[in-house]
Length: 141
Image 1: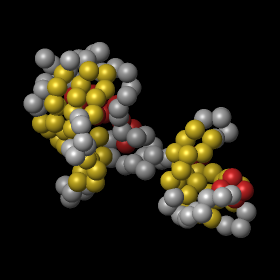
Image 2 (image 1 turned 135 degrees about the horizontal axis):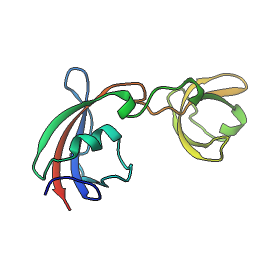
Image 3 (image 1 turned 90 degrees about the vertical axis):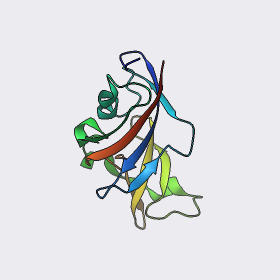
Image 4 (image 1 turned 135 degrees about the vertical axis):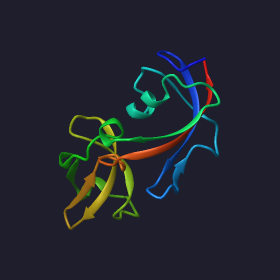
């Protein structure tokens, strides 16, 4: 069966670096799954799977606009240091959940700490980057 709208697709992926090195992979766990057309995975990755079948293996390079989007300056903002009261290991690079001004939970990365504010970045770590995936389609239902 070829992958088309409303199919459930089971797959493994590896995210590859510039030299082909594996940055992250799903291969040590159960295959991931998604329903085609439900915006559950990166748009460019979903699009690259259309027409493929179980057993197909391929690599695809995806531009940032079809991946994790552009890196946006407005997604970097300051939060009062008081918000982090009780966080024992507050440090640059810490990933945590915060509630933004729209009252939505978002994953942020601490990028700077000073005496009164903590600067966080809510951009996806791969925002603004072209990305390359190695994909294996396991099953299509």
